[in-house]
Image 1 (cartoon, rainbow, N blue to C red):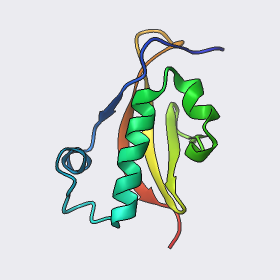
Image 2: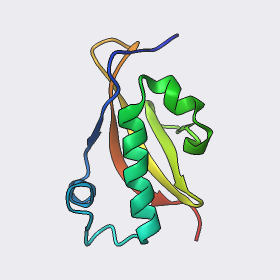
Image 3: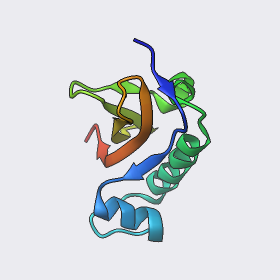
Image 4: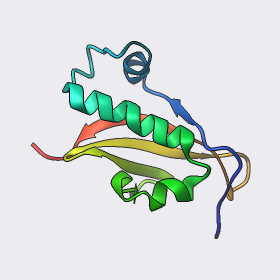
Length: 108
């Protein structure tokens, strides 16, 4: 199956993560500044991408499919990742957006 992207965009589902995006601060996401800075850079990369292939081909993103259907993970830095869903636009071949779910730490 091949996937067609019309316009790749992102949405932030998590309210606290949305606060972080809008204000640069969140009580729930008390993250190191370098992680927050990288989060904003990753969102810029998603916005700049023409399609999902651009993100998959960017080695610094370390794109990974997760076990849950349409769930993906993108590297922020070292042991921090963005977890998100691919949202399709009525067709299994057309991605509407990447829905950001969470920022997770993969190691202690």
